[in-house]
Length: 133
Image (cartoon, one colour):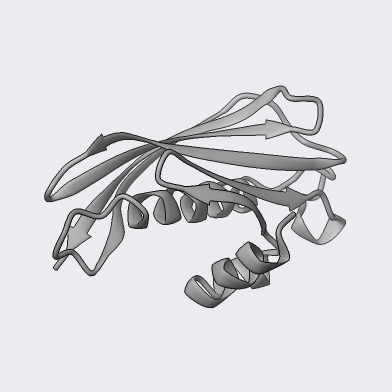
């Protein structure tokens, strides 16, 4: 975990501090965030809540889109997000890696994979980010 990057993440997106996300890496080609399993982030069955996974993926995707803004743009906003949940997480942590699929003038499309501590794919999210001017 990078303390400096995590501070930047929490400043840019305060919800990520509430969520408990930390930053591992951030660049135009990939953004990596981490979320530790905690009982306060779980469903009644002790599984990491899907909303926590989506929140982490959306934050990673949003940061990735921001790092790929075209000249003259001021920010991005998620306009579409599709998630596929593949397995539950009952301990350890998850890591989200967001990569751009399309870097356009009006939209940026991001693919985010969320893996558990054993490296297994937990969730895959594709999102469309509108480019704001």
